[in-house]
Every structure is written in C-alpha cells, then in structure tokens.
Length: 236
Image (cartoon, rainbow, N blue to C red):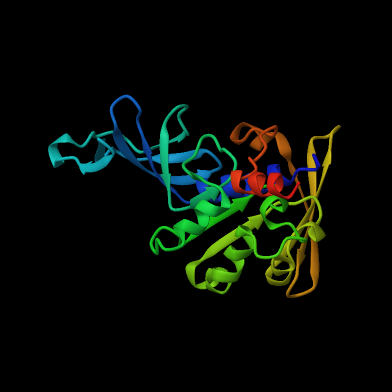
C-alpha cells in the first residue's frame, strides 16, 4: 500500500492521453480548436474549425473560422479536451476525458463494438472483484469472455493489486507485463521494475511522482459492489 501503483498507472494514462490529444474546447464559447501534441500538456493550437452545440459538433462556415496564428501553448485551465485515447477506470480522473465505471459496467460495454476498442481500462484495488479464492466473479468473467479478443480490440487492461497472488490465476496467466513499484517519500520518486512475462526480461525505470498528483485523488477507494455485500451478509 502507498507504493505508487495508482500514481504509476495514472501517469501511463496521462502520457498517452496527451500524446494523442487532437482538440480542445473553450468552455465559454464552445469553439473547438484542433491541436497537435508537443510535450506533456504543451500543445500547438490551430484556428477553431467547429463548435460544440448541445453536445454535438458543428462545423463552422468558412467565413466564421477564426483566423489566428498557430502557436504553442500550455493546455488552458478549465478547458475540455478530446484525445484518441479512450479511458475506462473505476476511480476518478481530472483534467482529461474518461469513462468512470466499475468492472460490471465494463462488462456491459463489451457489446458496444465501437466503444470498447483502442482503449485503456484500469481496475484499481482489483482484488475486490477478482480475488483469488472466489471463482467466477464478475472480474474473472471479463477475462474469461474477452481476454483473447484484447489484441484484436487493441485494449490494454491494467489491474492494480498489492500482491499478484491476491487475484485470480487467469489474470496472472494472461498478463503480458508485471510492474512492481516502490515510492520514496524523501525524493518523491517512484522506482519501477517492469517485467516482460513473455520474454522473461526485467527493466528498471524511475519517475517523479508529483507531476501526476493533480490528475487523481490518492485517497479515493473504489466502492465494494452492493451484490457482494449482500452475499456476505447472507453467508454470515
């Protein structure tokens, strides 16, 4: 606990999101500005070519497009953004678009062919619904039903857990990478050991943790599903 698991996976999401950012939206006017990523939240902005109206994108007429010089800026505070990176998590994120959902909702989304492709899914405290001593729970079903489709769907699933043995064997069997993290309270650095399960190789890596703190709440705990609580009460 407290060794940087959530910090690490949030960093992965943030980096990928801003690497593939393509538009930003003014909260005041609804104007949509095409952008290109530069580095982190630094982007190159172009003249607005569309507008968000009642949740729908409308192209601006040629004579309405704002003529402005292309320039490099930092992501404006309070502005919405659109990225090619789609994110599904069971904890809240800030400063980027994502879908907040629990594993059972992720299971429901599987039938949405266009939605559940080219995306990243994160399940924090995954032992809650994928605990090793309980067989076909909802999280195990996710793996059983579509683990073999992940490559074709271009889905990356990240499971966060204190120890690998806490979760179902299916996760450990199919996992491509195992990332061990260690947080240094003095330097605020997180040291990672990235293990490639297929190749049997290891690679160390370190990064500065505070750069990602604003994107999530380190004290947030994923809720325990009501059906699990009901079953526990029934068995006591």
